[in-house]
Length: 211
Image (cartoon, rainbow, N blue to C red; front, side, top):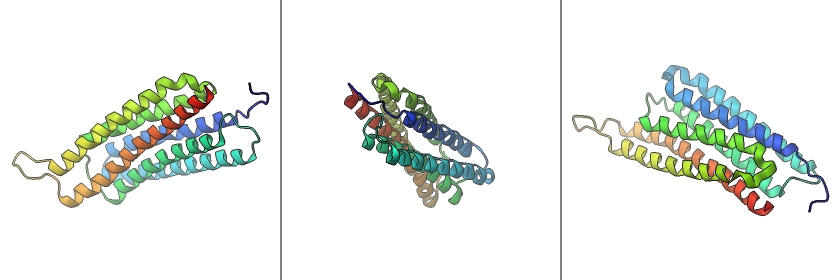
């Protein structure tokens, strides 16, 4: 039995931080769908969102340093905030590389991967208010794990397309430099999926401790 009330402001702070993931995933979807000339504008919006994410993380850490009692272990709150920040960093880096490398078009699987990230972002944002009853979030972390498995499969197929893709005449349809540039962007998207799973793992750990 807890005899001292716990500070509940962390729930609101984490919910706000996770909301940036939804914005970031939406910007990724926009970036890969617009002409190359419009991508710097979208990438800047992504960069602005990443800065908001950094601010949210700093606010959570400051709250940790000034709160005597927390809803659950301080290390878990720190890991949760850091995990959310990692996802947004991966998204921002993917957008930045797409612009810097001037990639003209992406394989179809990239859109599928971004759709999976958007679903994971929505689930994560919806889950944060549920931290008040973290044991009820089993469906959340199970679905995130499933999405990450799907993302791994899409990632492997994308690599096959990049390195083995051939046109009707048997020629490789992508030059080696474009392949490597595109792979770096795809790697960052796959890393974002891994980071989503890490956030879900932290929440599962919290649920075990609170049970």
